[in-house]
Image (cartoon, rainbow, N blue to C red):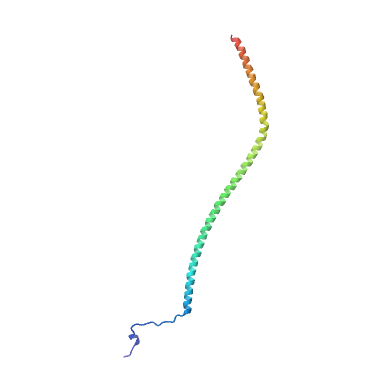
Length: 135
């Protein structure tokens, strides 16, 4: 009988391969690079997402501010138009009124007492005439 070492061995041990340090370093470097690129990619995604959201918010704020400025400008224009129309109205109304009012008041004052006196005298004359007739 021939002696087989394989059969007699209680268990088979695989032969140890020599690990190449260079390939191991390459695998570790590739793992580190892939993990860091994943982390960087996720961080850049989050940053762009938040930047986009912030940009949208700023754009909406800017649009609201522009709308408010347009409203303010239109109101200012209306105020200027009203001021100019009031100035024109007061300029046209004040000059003629100043001239007419004093003259009209003086004439009315002069005429009203004369009319009242004339009415009183007519009434007194009529009463005086009527009284003696009745008696």
